[in-house]
Length: 260
Length: 260
Image (cartoon, rainbow over all chains, first blue to last red; front, side):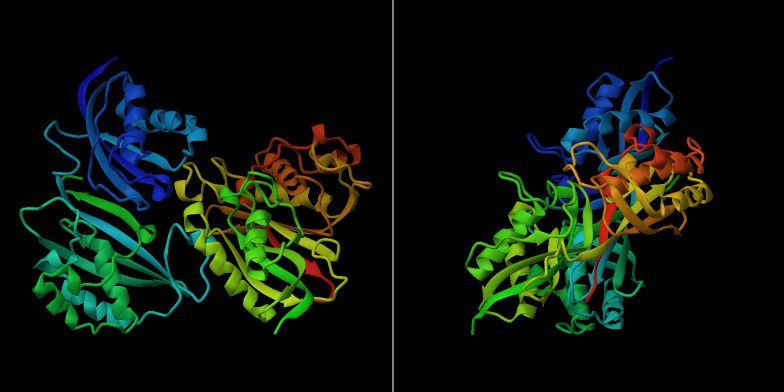
């Protein structure tokens, strides 16, 4: 039984440490590249994936999404196990760091990126005098304590619909508009010395979550006053915002679609 | 101020993933090699470390110990920060995965390995239908549930003083005696799907903890009866014991000395 030209949506998790990011690049190990290789082998045709978020090198994903159209000899729900088997087969190439969690059939017009209504990123920070060697690729490790209340007050200025040009890194593609809506930013204390910064929004500019995090961290360290966030946003200048937090702490957590 | 020929004991933690084990080897990145390089730079002389445990490639340490004799221009308690700085300087070489936690002066006759009275290893197992990509280097991931009570019953036969030749891998150095004392094995459930196997003993043969773990895992899967452990030990044959569990789940947790 061959299912012809089915549009399929994948949910994917990966440890971004040993990837040159999501996007396919010649001669580099990327998440898209690895997945396309495995899926092309499985489908016996050249597969092109449309990923929702082009995560940077070192950035992780708990719920990345990607869609593709192909014909299959197996039921769609068996794609994860079969593709993961191929991915794991290249053990020597350092694999085991990307895994397809699920696959489902979607309407022909569906596109993982353009159909997305929003995304949630989580940025994980560890505040402790001594860094943890086991978390070096999975947390932004800061040796000082952060003032969570100041960070929460600052975050309130970011929530809502604004022109976020101040949080856009150079090097991103030129976007028609830099207006985005941040539905909410939750700053949660987890255990004794961990902070999770959850950012939900309808879309994100290049490096936006990492620059928001860097700016909030500087606020938590007392280098910026919470109320200045309003001026930073209004000024629309990257120079007024804080540093770009490192990729290691960032996780693409969830993608929202209307029908799912 | 130079302190002449001080004997110093270090406590070290490392993520063993990207090391070819503890022991110095030409042309390979090893924990001993990296530390000796940093300490030699710091002390401006060729430093040779005596490590307590020669952990295998992929095995981690929370409390490895190593001693060395040298003359210093700085107080002993400043060695960790200074040496860690040098270790972190080689960022491109993938460092950040080994860190000296503390340094203290010990009597001239002290030797990190020969003065040790015992060690504690922890072996971490994760039982879940789907493997976690973020834990692939830090847990033994098993897709079935383990019978903890059967494992605990089996472990009771291992505790005590026995000839443990059955748990010694080929390839280790020929030891005069294969008699060792296992003070205790604790099998703790941690959260919903994690098991920590803590093994304390006065000494360990080559791969002993990993073979004990493999044998206990097979017992937990119902492939062996708990009471057969007594026969396996009495039989003194490696063939009767279980498989060697992978290095990823193993942590050298603590080393015991009389005076500390």
